Image (cartoon, rainbow, N blue to C red; front, side):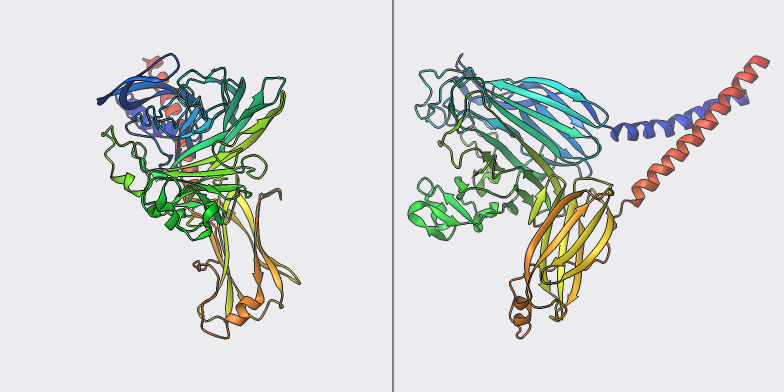
Amino acid sequence: MRKKVLFILTLILAISILLPCAKAAADETLKIYKSTVEFRHFYFETDENNMIVNYDKNKTVKTTFNTIVIENPFIKVTLLPEYGGRILSIIYKPTGHEMLYQNPVGAPYGIKEGNFYYDWLMVYGGIFPTFPEPEHGKAWCLPWESEIIEQSDEKISVEMKFTDTISSGPNVPGKFDNGRTDLTLISTVTVYRDKSYVDYNIRLVNNKNEPVNYEYWTCVTFAPGSEPNNTYCPPDTEIVAPISKVLLKDDWWPWMGSSEKAISKSNHVFEYNNLAHFKNWKDMGIAYAYPEVSENWWGVINHENEVGLLRIADNKNSTPGLKFWTWGIDSKNVNPETFENPARPYIELWAGHSPQFFADTKIGPNEEKAWTEHYIPTIGMSKVTHANENAAIYLNHAPDEKKENILFNAEIFATHPNEVLKVSLCLEGKNSYILLEETIEVNPTAPAKYSVPLPLDKPENGEYTYQLILSNDTGKILAQAQIPFKTEDYREASKDSGETNAGPELPAASSSVNDNAGIWYFAVGAIIILLIFSIILVICIIKYRKGHVAK
């Protein structure tokens, strides 16, 4: 009897250890599964052409959609093929934050005002392709085909596809004039086992033997740093983009004309400073990067918790257009249960083949255009000067308080969590100066930060490049960034007490080995405990069986 009791107690103890370990192991794997989502919205009815024919301002209903979820240890990505072929949600698992906006209550708006292809619109949110017309295109509310095209231990890829076979009906506003294009749009979402970014490949295929006019835009509704199921942008949210000029639609929204300093008022071209901050959007409005975007990144940072989401792409050659839209800062006070006001507190950025809406481009006979976008969450970064799919980087230099040293500052948030990478900081010019070389273990919850002092009189006079190189253990360069540095800027400034044009100072840090050791110790400890209790369990089973046979 004692042996039986001992066996049962040991079994219970082993199970109590094994189950949490099994769950932890499951959370550490790459996986894909089916799920559903409910979209609550005001009641409406559409005809066979997707035009609204009836709606109820006082009634909300729920529509249930099937979703596809891909997870690795760092991100949870929810795909919604049935409603616009969109990435509905990206949750960054190390902090639990949502990166994208989802509307808590959808409200049809713009009904019969001539602004959209179907003469109405309803915001849900996420990342989704819009084509072949401007202003959300034709496929934003329609089901797309979907298929898992690759599933391995290293990555999972899901394809969503839509072909435009829609002919314009009599009630489509006349400015949407591209007609039936027969273009096929294929978007492929890939999540890798050990990376914290989303790989989003897009192919646009012309199935005709003739050129076709079209517009293409990727729409992104940003709300980084939100709690899941409660998404919004707080006032202290910034649109980070490597541009200096914007074209404002101040002819539609006059308030925009006084929001920035005019460069060419008659052409609606302004400096880009104030409108980078959500709190300065006094009302709804549209802006475009002017003349277009040439750098490979832009995004949004929530400064309340310094959580951001960046979009990475070859903008210069693929998506040079950048459109800004918000409902204005007062949207945070709108009750979503009110049908009459569809304003919602998010930031909407668009990446386009055209510089503006209603500016068609062409695709040649049987041509295929393809490009890849990456979406990378960032944690703890307040500024960005460079980014690619491997890392977000901020570089600057500034004098120390006594103006005796120049501080070469750097922040790096890499998308290779828990990997050991090499960081090199140097000055390249008339002479070369190695500022720092060391390895870091990438922390998924904080950037690596550096502030390396160099005596003011050490660099020989001249112009230099302050450079950062991030590489892996095989020597492959993952990211490279550089900014200019001139010695005379600092030596002249040191003669007086005036301010320099250098950026903000970062806290000094001689090393950036991140605090991930505890994670590995826990993992090793869990494995050891698992092995010990497995051995105990086996011994108890053997003893129990021997005792049972002896009886």
